[in-house]
Image (tube, rainbow, N blue to C red; front, side, top):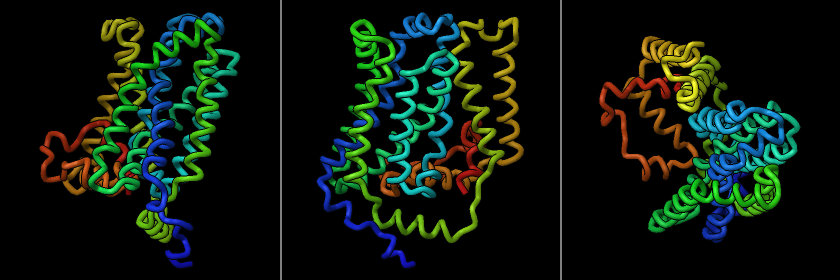
Length: 318
C-alpha cells in the first residue's frame, strides 16, 4: 500500500482553522479545569463517600500524578497511533472516566477513575498544540498559541468557582458529570474536522515498517519518579516532610534518589539523546519543535543533561 493511499481523504487546509481551534481548545479547557474544579467540592465528596478529608486528597493527587506520567510519552503515542486517533481516544476515555467518577460509589472507585481520567487527559494539551500549529499558517500561529494559552490559564482560575457553584446548586457528582455532554460535543466536532497532515501519515507508515521498540524499564522508572515526586509534594506538609515518623516522605525521597542514580549511571543523557528527547516530546508537530523550542543538545549545559525526570523516558522515545 502506498503512502498516497494512506493519506486522508481531504486536506486539513480545507477546514477553517478557527473551527479547528474551537473544537480543539474545548477538551484542553476541560482537562485543565479538572485539576482544580474538585478542590472546593472535596469536603462534600468525602462526606458523600464516608471518607476522611486526608484520604480524599488522593482524588486530587492521583489525577495530577497520572497526568505527569502520560505527558512525556505523548509524542511517542501520537507517532505510533496517529495524532488524530490518539486525540480522539483521549477525549473519549476522558469523557467516559468523568462519567464513572460521577457514578463512583466509594472513594477507592473515585480514585481509580480519576487515575483513568488523568492518563487520558495528559495527552490532550500537547496534541492540541500540534493540531493548532498545523491548522494555522505560520503567520497566525502566534494567535493560535495565544488562544491555547488563554484556555490553559483561565481554566484553573474558573475551576474552584465553577466547582463551588455546581456543588452548592446541584451535587458534587456534577463536578465530574458536567464533562460528559461537553466531551461528547468535542468528540463529535474533532471527529468531523480533524485529519492528520500528510507528513504525519508518512511518518506513521515509516514507523510501521521498523521494528517495534518500547522500554518497559524506562516506563517503570518514569512512573516511579513522577508518582514519588507528586505524592511527596502533595502530602509533604501533612506528613511533616522529613520529620515523618512513618518514613513515608523519606521513602519517596529515597526512590527519587535511586532513580536519579540509576538514570545517571545506566543511561546518561548525551547531547544526541537530549536532541532526540526534544524532538520526540514534540513529535505531535515538527512545527512545534522548530517554533516553540530553541533548545538543542549544544545549548544544554552538562549539568542539565541528566535530570531524573527525563532519563527514564529516553528508552521509550526510540
